[in-house]
Image (cartoon, rainbow, N blue to C red; front, side, top):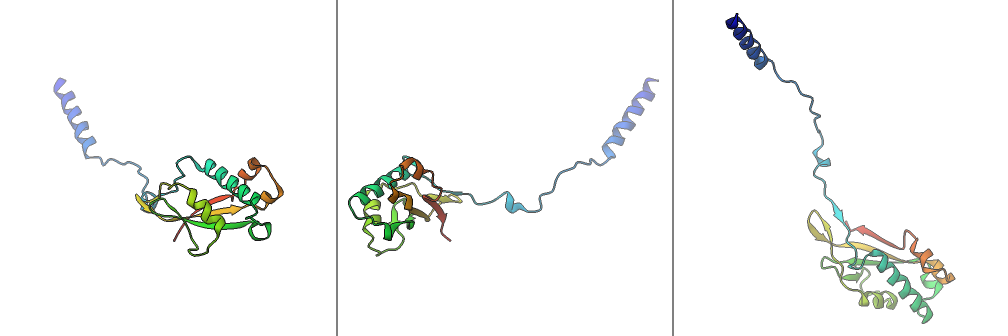
Length: 154
């Protein structure tokens, strides 16, 4: 009897080894979803909110000094390059706009943007909101989504 049980056990064990194992594994057909480049926009050392506050404060001071006119600068967007080394540069080299030049001159270097582990140039758009000329509070101006935008250069 014991010998029959061992033979049955060996038969079932051999049978289980001969049966192919079926497992459901979802096949990924597009590997580009896994290995995708990640773009990182880094902020100034003291944060983007503080940068926006400095931008608005500078604009108000410049307006009080009479260098910022509503006819020229309402809803104007300055384009600034963030270089690989983190310095802020006027995209329109030689534009000679004193408002932007004086602001950029006072700014410290940013950490550069990164794409796939390498530093890159990217575009920073600084808007002069038209509400600034209507003496709107800074808190309301900070809520503007398009006050400072970042875009990758192609």
